[in-house]
Image 1 (cartoon, helix red, strand yellow):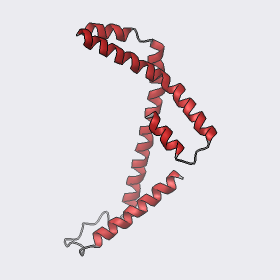
Image 2 (image 1 turned 180 degrees about the vertical axis):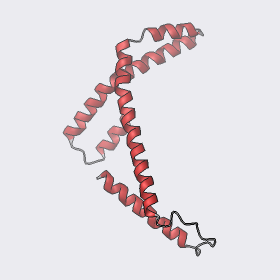
Image 3 (image 1 turned 90 degrees about the vertical axis):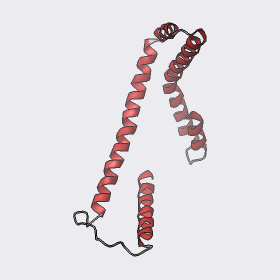
Image 4 (image 1 turned 120 degrees about the horizontal axis):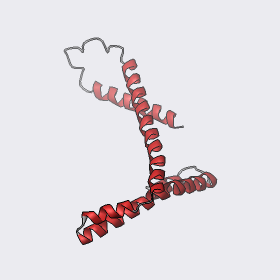
Length: 138
C-alpha cells in the first residue's frame, strides 16, 4: 500500500514538502503496525516449523504491549473515519436519488419505454453522477 500511495502522489500535483511530510507521518504511524505484523509472521513461521501451537501463543505473549496499544490507537480512529465517510457518502447519494425521482410514490407504468431511451437516460445519469463526484473531490 505504501508503494501505491507513493506512486499516486508522484503522479499528482502534490508538492514536494506535503509529499515528504505525508510520507514521514505515514512511516511514523505505520511503524508499530509493521513491527507487530513482523512479530506475528515470525511467530507463525516458527510455530509451523516446529508444529507447535503453544509456541505461537508464547511468541504472541512476547509482543510489546505498547505496540499493540499504538496499533489500535492509530488503526481504530482511522478505520472509523474512513467507514463513517463512506457511510455519509452513501446516505447523501441515497438522498439525491430519492429527491431526483419525482414519481417515486407512483407506480411504474405497465408498458416499457421505447427501445434505446433507457440507455440514454442511464448514460445521462452516469455523467451527472461522475460530474458530482468530481465536484466533491475538488
